[in-house]
Image (cartoon, helix red, strand yellow):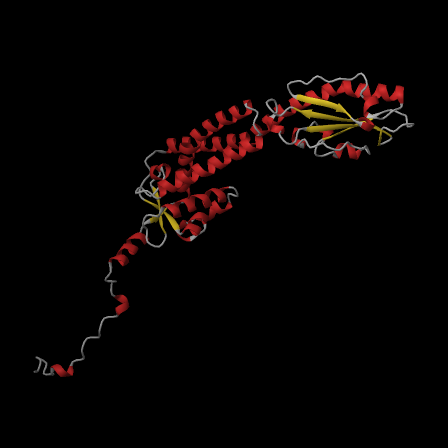
Amino acid sequence: MTTASGSSVSDIDPAPPPDRASLPTPTSSGSARASFDARSWASFSRRLVALAADGVIFQTPFAIVAIFVLRYQALAQASSSMTMLAVEAAYVGLFVLYHGLQNASSGMGTRGRRWAQVAVVLADSGERIGIVRACWRALVSLASALTILPDLLPLFTPRRRSFADLLAGTVVVQNGPMKAGGGVIATVLVIFLAELAVGGVAAVAIPSAIDFEVRSKVNEGLVLVEEAKLAVDENFQNDDDPSAAALSRNYAFKPTRYVASIVIGDGGAITITYDTTQALPQLAGQNVLTLQANINGRPLTAGVGGPIDWACASRSSTVAKSKGLSVAAGANLAPQYAPLQCR
């Protein structure tokens, strides 16, 4: 067969086969990934707004409940360290559940993220994340927030991924314009920052307040022990006998609400034992404070006279030892509850 120009078909080179690399992938996953990659990654400011909104939603009711719990525990005279540990554990658990359950839901984000129009999805496919991954991401996010720096990674990483995103294999995408104006956003940010500031102060102030209340009750023992100290001083001067029987002559102690006993021992050692059954349960297992009469830095000894110096000791006795004084054995009161001179 010849063409109009006179050449035959066999003289024309056949068209080259198409390049396979340039062909679209015949699977639906390829188009889904392309569509996912075309989406906008959530900006740092959008993530901050979502964080603030969640902070207000979650932290406000938690803070109110925590304040009531801490106040109740203070009135019940519970240990400040154990109380704060319980509150902190509750916060971590509820934070992980709040973020984990909602990020793994069909909405793919917490209430704050949905309000800010962002969603947490799998980094390789854009699909919804599972509950285990969501809880792990929440835990990492909470831990990284303690140092702040990992949360700044979206400013520098591809696809604006945070430290929690990198460890959990997720990415935060932007779905559309936010549902609130600038005034509302500014108000949410101010409330969130104020809550952070108040929470930081409360975390320090509340345990200190509880410890102060305990110390004020411990001080009653030091007031009541003055009579025992006077008995030791007078009896030793009169008898020159450092035995417990001689030093405690004509002295008797009547238990009070906070002090269970004050006992005078050999060499001028005085033991104060606090009542932990009802009055001071914070001191359970560590409720003994001691004082030691010293003459020239030694316990009272027959034939050795002079002015008496008193050394107070809790589980620590740094102050007394720095003055070269001997301390009585048996003190186990936690230094945080002891007066300054007994630490």
